[in-house]
Length: 612
Figure 1 (cartoon, one colour):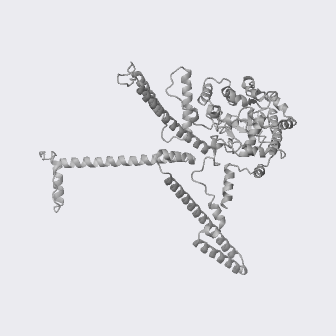
Figure 2 (tube, helix red, strand yellow):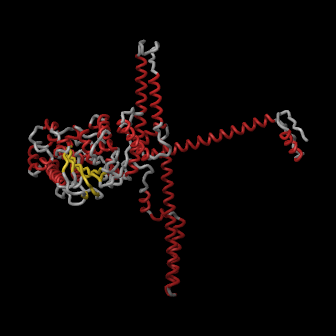
Figure 3 (cartoon, helix red, strand yellow):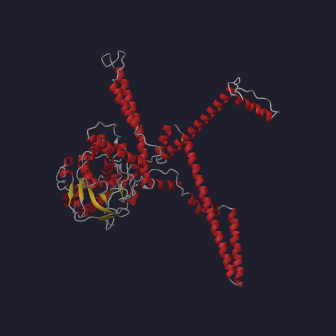
C-alpha cells in the first residue's frame, strides 16, 4: 500500500512523479525545478493572453462591421451629404475619393478581361467553322479555306498579344466613358427604391442633428436657469436648482423607454420605416385610451416614408403645371408617410419627391399626372382623381417662368421680360386654350372626381388635406389618427413655404395679373375660357379687384366631389390638349433672347461645347 506525500510546492506525489518520469526518459535533459506555484502563474498568464486576444479580435470585427454599415449608409447620400457626413465623422474625403477611383479602375479591368474572353471565344468559333467547312468541301475549295483559316489564326495571335481595346480604337474609348460613378448623385435616373432609401437615410441623419441641437438647447436653458436662480425655495442656498425625486424618476424612465426604441441589428431602412409606422399606430391607440405617451414623436419632416400597395387602381392627382401638385404631394406624404407617384421623370427627386416614374398599385396609392397637357409614361389605370386647379393667370405666368428659367424657384429678370413681351403674349394666348381643354377633359370623366382649388389649399391646408386624404384612401370616418397627423404637419411647419418640397417663388394670389395687359386679357377671353372658370367656381374672378382675390369664398366643405358612373379610366391614352399650334420652341426663344438655361442638362451641354 502506497502512501501519498506532499511536496514543497503543495502538490501531490503524482504531480511530483511526472518530472521524474520525464527525466528518466530523457537523461540528457537538465532537471527542471519543480514549483507548483510557478505553473499556476503561467497558466493564469496564458489564460489572460487568450482573453485579451479574443477581446482584440472582437473589437476588430466590431470596427470593420461599423465601418461597413456606415459606408453602406453613405452610399445613399448625394455628394453634399457625403461631404457633410465625412466632416462630422472626422474622416478624410481624399481617402474616400482614392478608394472610389480604385474601385472604378477595378471595374474597368474586370470589364476589359470579360470582353477579351468573349473575343477569344468568337475567334475560336470562327476557326472551328473553317475546319468544318474544309472537311466538307472538295479539294478545290480546300486551298481557299486553308488560307482563310491561316488568316484567322494570324489575327488571333496578333490580337492576343495586344489588348482588344487598343485594336478597336475610338469605339472602345467611348464605351469606357460610359462607366458611371460608384456613388451616383441623387438626381440620377435610378430606381425609386434606391431614391427612397437615400431619402430616408438623409432624414435619419438630419434627425440625429436635430436631436443634438435640442440637447444643446436644453442644456443651455438649464445652465441659464441655474445661473439666474436666487436663494428662494427652489434652490439649495448655493444658487443651484434642486430637482425633485419625481422629476428625476420620470426623466430616467423616459430615457429608458427611448433607449428601447433603438433599432435591432441588421435592420434595413424599409424595415425601420415600417417599425416607426407601427409605433405610430400603437401610440395612437394609447392616446385614444387616455394613457400617457411613453415618448415624444419624431418631427414630421424627419419621419421615414414607405411604399405601400393598394388593392384597387391608383388615385390620380391631375393638375395643370404650376397649380400646386408638388405642395399637395408633400403634404400627403407628411400625413400618410406614403410615397406619391408620378408618370414623369422630372427634377423633383432632388426636392425629396422620390416616386418619379412609379405608377403601379404595387408601390403607390396617389399618382401625379399632367395629362392631357402632356403625355407621361407609362399608361396606368385610375379609379378616382383629385383635380387640383388654380386660377389661369397665376398658373400660366408661373409656367412661363418655369420654361424660361428651367427651375421651379426662380423668376426671369425685368429686362428679359421686357425683351420677351411678344413671346409672352403669344404664349399666354396659346396656353389659355391648353388650360381650358385640360380642365374640360377632366370635368367630363365619369370616375369619382374631387375638385380642390389651390387658393383654398394655401389658406386652409388642414381642412383641404383632410378632404383629400379621406377621398384618396376612401375613409368614411377620419377618426383621431389622421386628424392628429394633419394637425401635426400644419402646426410644426406653420408657414406654407415650409410645407412644400421647395421654396416657391415670391408672390401671392392674383399678383400675376399685373403682367397681363388689358388687350392681352381680351384676347384670352376670345378663346372662350370663361365657361370653365364658372365650372371651377372662378366665375366672378375678373369682376373683383385683385386685392379681393385672396378673400375668395371657399368651396363647400373646402372641396367638391362629383358623382361617377364609371369604374376606371386609362391615363396617358388619347389626344393631348396641347397640339402643334400651342407648342413653343423654347430653345429658339432663349437663343434669340440670349438666355442660358441653368438646368443640369443644359449646363452639361455648355461645358461639353466649351471643352471642345
